[in-house]
Length: 384
Image (cartoon, rainbow, N blue to C red; front, side):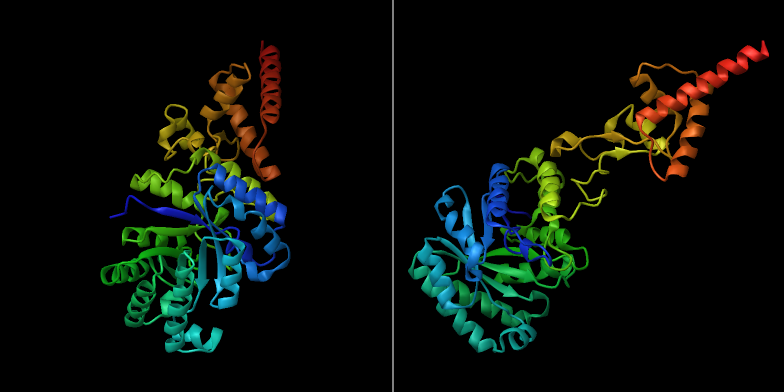
């Protein structure tokens, strides 16, 4: 069962910015933070102070905004890096540490004993300074389950506030991810955070599976941006939880579409039209059978109204359209047609759509209507 005290944490400004080719300025990061807070996000992972330069300038510039939301800085397992963040005045820190033998050996060239000792020491230092402490178990998929429990107990006893379960390369199925969350939740009283990558397209499903298994926190990014195939999309998770599971996170759903599209422009990576929730085609309808039903009852082929997420319904006139849409669109222009004219218009619409490889505009339809009407009038006159 999903808890009633879930906390969404957006990591667009940290993990999202690690998308290859994406680099956000101080001004841009500030604007994104503003937008996230404006729609009701209450926890944001804002970046990596150890990068220095403009990244550090941004992090320093927003330290006084910690009363607006929990702002979390990210660090390697390096004492000096974390102390520097605390010295800036940050009250919430995260440290990323590998938990699998593979990542311990290949990433930091250490062993399990080093991990347990380092985690214990760093968590203790942060708690001595009154910080909220988050710590990772990176590469969850390849971490020995028994050792994972030992690690969870170690960081909990040291005072960690939450343990981030990172499916770092997105290898787990929802059943497996949920199972790992449940196994730790049974053995250790520590808040857990879902951090799911999308390499197999399962980030949203894994996040929800983790929440169903008892996790309290979860990570998302705008448009699912992130390393490789990205992460769980904020709009996808928030709306799925709201509509399918009855969980209200306090996020303003009506701001999701504009946030997604504006962010796509900022990073230069346009959303695919079929991107769930916020894509341009999500509430677009062309198929004749679908439109015929939609004109009677919009719930026929929409799971919820577009205005709920700040979207807009569109009827697309193209190859797959039916006569009902032709008649409706002409009526919207104040033009009435009989069945014969509508049928002729539809035949021409379909051919034009094929010829130009896409949908027709209202202006093209009215022009076709004019041509069909003139042709019909001319034919009638000559016949009489």
